[in-house]
Image 1 (cartoon, rainbow, N blue to C red):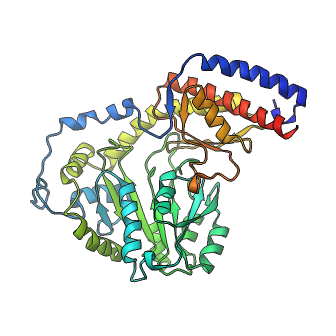
Image 2: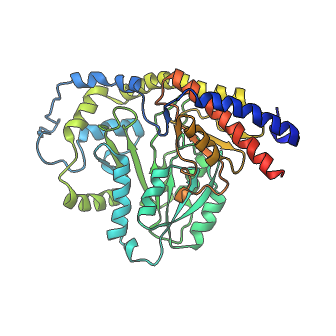
Image 3: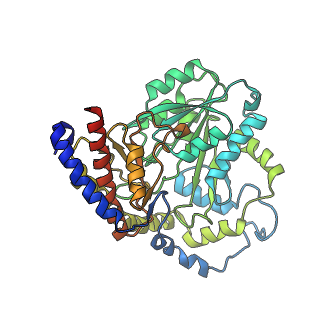
Length: 423
């Protein structure tokens, strides 16, 4: 039913009906959490046998991993990720549990010391970053923390709007970078096309030290279907821009979020520059955990088999979200959404001006969601319509109840908005 085409009287009757349904939900005193993309207990249980591993702490080179050293990570762990992600080991640093930590440190080094021999960003009158959105709130929080001016870049089905990106970076040398989640993007689940990757790698930039922050967080996280991703490091090198990319990945949603292994990759020059600064900051990350992770998976095929298992766990939850949206909101004119093949989220656009109201209604009835606006820089969604749904953490039963309520809130907020517009 196209709610947007109803008469005023029909909208009033529908609002009354929806309000009664909503009040019935409120009386249930629900307490459900869909606020962040956290692995469920069942997903984490898939890793519990890692605790049974008695770590062989001697590396192949005969280094005792219990002691100091190996600043850039255990070589055989690099080999695992090299096989998994097709990144040369000499272009890689293995870190601690958080790729976000490595991203923050990378931005901080650019501000403190500069990169590629250019002026430290902190000494410039203005630093700007391009932010494809809807996007990842923690990316935006990092650049906001450093006082960077963030510029919204619309997402297309192929990735960021590259016509706009190319236009902006070609003429403004204060634009120093772009955030990218290239595979199963957060929150829409969009996979960057080969053309988008090529254009990012080869485009002309006014800033010599323009950097792509390539957060391949969901590089192996398919749910329904695997997607290939063009090699950004090779594409940049082939285009003569090999220093342009800082690439990040972690096992946070593969193993345990608090005890994963992260990596950063870039050109050999950038890696050497980074190691120079890291050598003052630390003597090395947790090498025992690096080895434990390696000894659990053994090789890249072991990681992929594990991801098959996690996909089986996540698929029923994505089914619940997508089928409920289809059943409750299709053709209403009150919402649109993407149907991702992988990643951790489903992105929903409500009727314009209704996202905050929808999230508020859900919270009042006992379902906590990611805040409306969080998927945009400064928490400001200019159309107040995008909401990120995180299906992974609740049980299937909890998720179904939460989605039924969410769809009801979308309808109630939308009908109220339509009535307000037609006063």
